[in-house]
Image (cartoon, rainbow, N blue to C red; front, side, top):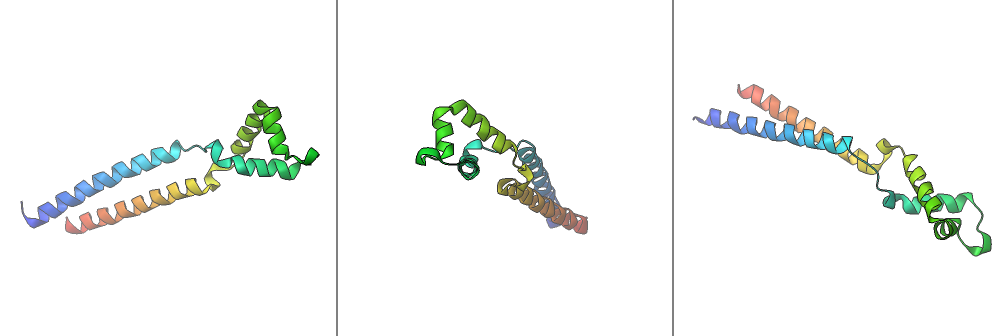
Length: 115
């Protein structure tokens, strides 16, 4: 094998690796779900802002202690209302995917120049 063939083989291997990484990242994006526990503070803030605080207790605390099932349902509904595409975690995954695609394009162009 000469140097050119070795370089071509390395690029082809890198392209295969990038394609696999793109497939994995796309699967991660497709299966992305929000973790309710990460939004509990925001949910509680929303409840506390929307309702009066009787007896000097926060409405979120009252709901959580007095009716934990309703609290869990409220949290779940709150998280469901969030646009997943607008979350920072989702945007980061999309940026990572775009970076991988750009890197793949660069590798393919490099291979095309050598061929």
